[in-house]
Image (tube, rainbow, N blue to C red; front, side, top):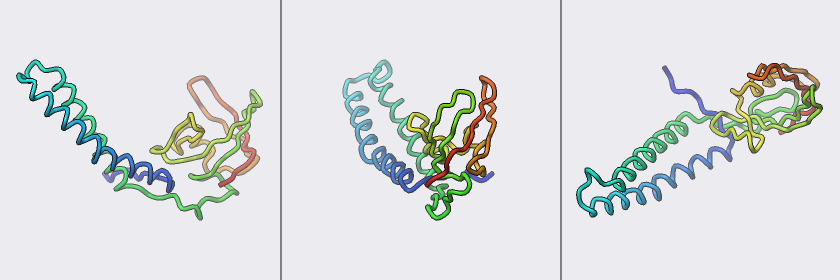
Length: 158
């Protein structure tokens, strides 16, 4: 089975590259130093600092592998592929909640860049899936654990 494609904006690509560089150049060195210091304490069989440092090292190496895989499978979202007539990855969409009347803007991004707290939702999220390919004025229904949410697409922009 092929690895899953990772959709990224240019900003998202740069952010992942910076994170990878930070883990490789800074975090690896820091944890190696912690391991060295813990070994100097003597018996590592009952040394919690050594155990903690080894666990952190495993976490760092796992994150490095994950980031390398994501970057290997990255597909950059081309600004030219983002249109304002239909919702696509990279679009910013103004939605009106038809029950509450609340209006919210979301930017549709790949799952690697999703950050709901910053109004960046994944194209694989329930709302993201429901609005992809839709046009301004469309009403969409989104099935969520709390029930059905109904949104009207008020505007699509880049």
